[in-house]
Length: 394
Image (cartoon, helix red, strand yellow):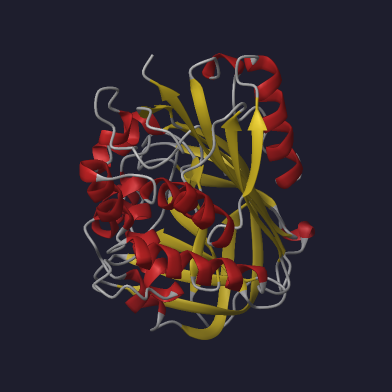
């Protein structure tokens, strides 16, 4: 998944109750999940969409540390994190654990591009960027928008196996640009138990009760972690990747047109994590589509719907602690780009989050999961959500 010049989010779980400044990775996962659910609930309900909660969280958290007033309050509330110290402890912990995930390729990279000359990050924010987010810092001549955009886009491509291209466009950058924050996230995993391509065939997929389209449907019978939630109205299936540290969770509504209701419940705070704890390993007949999705989401329109709006205010953005000199900044552009591919071997996904700041100027004995209707998937590693996909067959 990718984000261009701002932040992003997506997916599901439960609200964070902690008020401690020591926020562990489990609590952070819960906050990502809740914000992700609210984010997904605002996405286009007519097409397939992929997004990355984690990529967005990294950028939003760094911006929160450089904000104050209403902007700071909105960001903390949106992130579900109580204070700045909790941001520092949580993201230091999650960064360390992500580097230790085994069996899959999981790359997380952060970069801060700063206007050349005597501009620099605020001293405390610079320390946080390096120590907490392991971010690289680079001076750039934003006056040459085309060259600056090319430099940033090449870095993003290099960190996402060339899956995310053209994150930044040259018209976003000019002499008023002061900062561009970018997070790049890349994931590639191989199923612990792969699907046999010979069992893949075109099958009808219900877009709604009246309309079907043929999609390539993979099939496998075997042992999986499986569960059912009557309250949420879904079947749950967890497919692990090699190494068992990462998995893809499938949330399949019982009703053909049930996905929007499921997303709404999750956005309202339904505790999906509690349902995952009830899952058990059993024989399952699994049918899921083979798909590839690319998305671009305008976060400048979406984030204000989630209560994060002051950072876009040209008159009073609250971004007073970003730079080493007193200058009013605001977020001029916020876009996410994302990519995911799921096939018989496994899944590959990528995302980037950026932010531009501009100065004012066969039958077996067991359950069957047949994903032949709109559903949600979530890539999870170390109990942290990385990518979420809403698949509607179109």
